[in-house]
Length: 106
Image 1 (cartoon, one colour):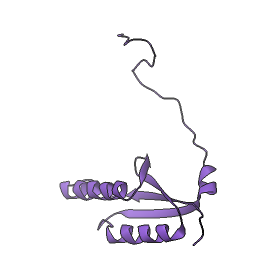
Image 2 (tube, rainbow, N blue to C red; image 1 turned 135 degrees about the vertical axis):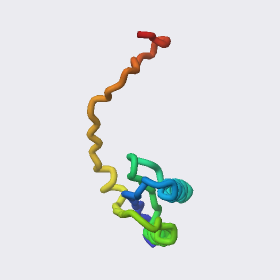
Image 3 (cartoon, rainbow, N blue to C red; image 1 turned 135 degrees about the horizontal axis):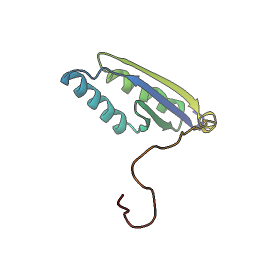
């Protein structure tokens, strides 16, 4: 096996209308975190894999723990491809005053 760092990006859309749905959603997210995934966005997680065999074993684990409903997609990239992501962040809107000073009350 070559030492080509890979990045797995997992996207999912699971139902969350019933208590059973929410329980399955929570269990799935816990399993992702247990298996080394980190949250990028609300329903987008990423994992660094040191080689293709780790990608394959992770895919088997995901298939074994797949929720009964919903959609899960996995995109695997080289680390170099992943590093080319451009994060575009809009203006943050909040009522909180961001300051290094002491708490400011309005």
